[in-house]
Length: 629
Image 1 (cartoon, rainbow, N blue to C red):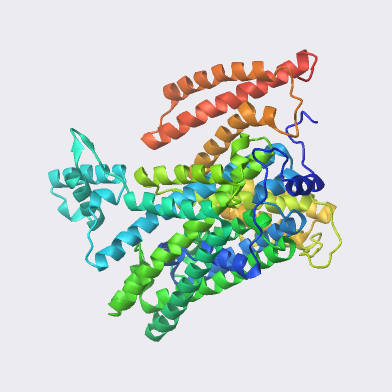
Image 2 (image 1 turned 30 degrees about the vertical axis):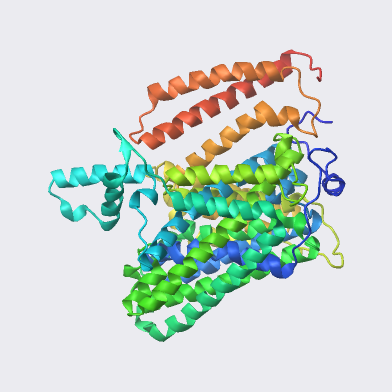
């Protein structure tokens, strides 16, 4: 056993552990093998064709014009590189856990924990967003049938409170024109909600209801989940294709000119929303142990679903920007909006119904994936054993599934997370970066019959040539970074330049495989487009995760039964450092935003704990003779 935080779990051990059911009589068991390549492809489509095609595509089209189709192509290529790397790992390690398990085999335990913790955030926050989005579509659908749900039962407390304060402020300043329909609706929720004194009973009940229903479906078995997913996907694909076919009869080609009205920068503004729509294919890899032939079917399912979804998204974008001018597409329901503009209101009703089905299927796939991440981390000892419990009748990770329901359902009642697409996207891109980097660390393996094999293309000359070309064409922007006029928002791009230069040298010297190198660089570049604030939020989450690893995962890891003798002392000292850090943040923080004050406070606590622990660990290891316990 190793004391190193970078101890690796060999592929042979991962496969042996999976085959043995992990030995613990209370928690052992196997997941039921039910999925084939058709099921996996439909699951990928279920996760990708959702809120993106019915919602976020509108704002992306508003910013990028018809040129948003280029963004879909670029995103598909980026995801394609990552999908091929996922497929390589899936063919070698056909077990649940997705990028977490792959990182354990390639980078070691610490990086595996980081990516596992990152995936938990990605899936949970993404599903909260989808649940809230589903609630909106569902309530609108009910309104079409003249069924009215009280406003205070369909939104979060903070939105209603903020709207009420805005109405008071605008009314006082006689600026009634600033009160939008959205603010009016939220203010109605506040004014009509029952309560006690100043406390109002406001909660998003439909969002909670769909999470409970989906969680129950995932809990009772993969077969039932598969049947529900397949039915929903076939229905929504049929509706999307019909919408595309009908919409093309109402396209005015003049609306496609200019193609990129706001330039390439305008196209890239939609990257978070577009990428948020594409992240679903990685959830397929969490079902590896439930596939009949994972080494053959998982890679095919990922790639097939990615190709189908890309074609659908490009066609939808062309229809949207062809039916109306791109300037009118900054709406929450762009598909319904454009058909209303051409007086096809009945089609709008069908689209609302399809949106309810589409977002429910996305929620289903991610509620299926998250418990399997919990389960995989628990199997390795990084989380308590109960998370890896397999239900004796349903053959699902039962406890982890219930926890996932609470983690998503309760926040969906009360939160309105406007940052979710950015935060989910940066988490997913980070996972993709590590998966692509992990492939570079795997020993090359000869192709085997019946298994996917990532083709090797020597990047020795290609990557340096691309680096030189990009440096030439974007030379003005790169030089401008060093003129002293830029701020902290440019820090992520500095990191990208450094990573690009390093990988260029390594590609030349080590003759790295081209596909994972391009995947790593393209994903990291998209991360730089998500803004400094999202990087800070993401860093807070990762640092909190590292603190949990120090406090629990390191000493309970099955690969590390031996721990350093100073570990417990260092933990006690680091808690003091964390408390001191909070006081330092309170005294010196100059942020005006309450949200950012909270974020920096959490970062101060978590970072103080981590830094003091690291310093104490270093001192103890240097000045004391280590003994394992």
